[in-house]
Amino acid sequence: QAKLLQARVLIVGAGGLGSPLILYLAAAGVGTIGVADFDSVSLSNLQRQIAHGTSDIGRMKTDSAADAVHRINPETKLISHPVKIERENVLDLVSSYDIIADGSDNFETRFLVADACYFAKRSLVSAAVTQFDGQL
Image (cartoon, rainbow, N blue to C red; front, top):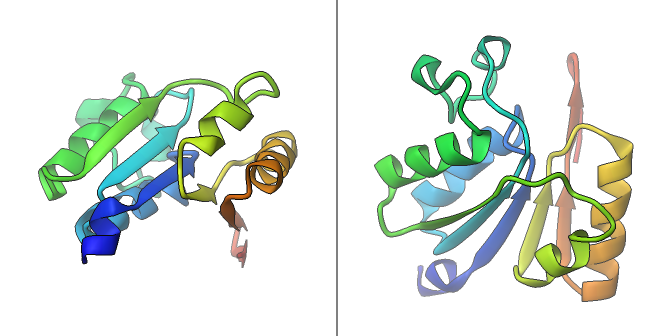
């Protein structure tokens, strides 16, 4: 439990994959969770993005996720990164964390995150879902 409290995990994407992961990591006692997502919550997200509710519609997903984490575990620190992952910011962002969990929904971001993790020597867990298929 002490190691979890010291862990710093970056989650790329607060959508269908990142949203439940954020909640599970907070419940497990991870000390610092970073969330990188530049999108806002919409009604069509709610059936699969369980960190967000109807009162969050229109809010940044990073802000909604921060509130959800605080409700589950007020000891977990959530760092919001409401930015689009780009070549100019990805290496600095990834370098600040121990483990990166990529649940983004586009190949450009996936490739940028994978390359940054390689150069920063960070562990990467990458997952993707489409319709009824998933990859980890």
